[in-house]
Picture 1: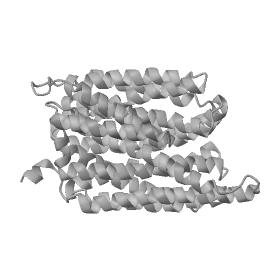
Picture 2 (picture 1 turned 120 degrees about the vertical axis):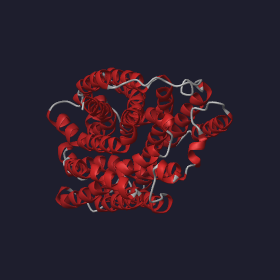
Picture 3 (picture 1 turned 60 degrees about the vertical axis):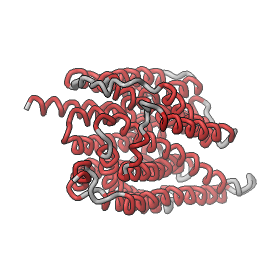
Picture 4 (picture 1 turned 90 degrees about the horizontal axis):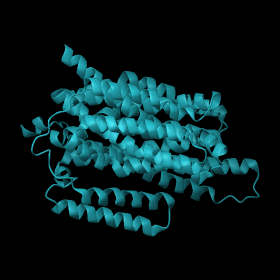
Length: 463
């Protein structure tokens, strides 16, 4: 019983720590209009408040996983949690936009170490029961990410946007204390005390950062080309390195490759739809920050009661059905969002949110568990890093692509048009963007139906 109690508190610690990272991805979106007015940020500046954080996450996930596998997942988790709290305090005290963007980069770097090592720490702590633990972790951190918008909306509307960063401090303190008290640092074997691939780590982080920067900024395009070139050079290096930071052999596993491909598409759809939906509701449909966030409450409730159950069902029957059905429901919910034109059509927002929530509950636990269970335990940190990286890269690409579609669709109306015409143009542009996000979700459903076998455990495949 004491051992079980200790493991439970480790689960709570990882949920608290990872929740900070996930919440800061969503909660800031609601506050962007207010932050922009307060710190005099234009549309590009507001996007970069979100994107600098996500860019740092994408660039450092793999490095975080490799460091945790080598020097200790508990140690890295603790330092990442403390670092995230410090960066959050800086963000909350930001006097101008440049300071806030710098703090967001630091937040992103720390969050990469927290979220990646939390999954690896869970697998090391729970062993054969790690699938159930990962399912609970996914459900609760997913709930935290969805609770972020209504919480942020209330804080922004009734107090100050700065509180959305300061609330991370008590969460970080609780997470660090629980991990320090209950988590065990497993002694590294000779294989795990392998040399660190500094060159590979630098190439991967730098290449990912440059590539995503070039894509999001849509110029200068040489940054995108250079970033892709550096990533390709990193892959060549990794294929020849004795102790690569990213063992490419992992991708020869069908489940690992398919689960991560679906993760890329699903999280691209998720981020592309929610990011622009929150901006659209406040900027075009005339919702207040709190009103724009309220439809996500049922999403939180559905995740709370159903995500863990769908994770258990996927463990019992295999994830294929759930990884095909879940993204399809996400796409259907996203299509319903296109019917929202004003506050008077709020019922379409609620209907879309309910279907969207069900799709999210069906998807989140099976997709994470499938990706992690496909890798050997000694590569748990790397497996988590890869899965987190592709989810974040997918989110960044989607924000850039959906944003480009919306901007291109809206560039047609001239400045002399009436307010009603400009509103109609904004609605049309938003709908096109949501169609792109829905298409990404349906593509993810296809990958799940075709690429994921009915059974995923390494033991069942060996047998």
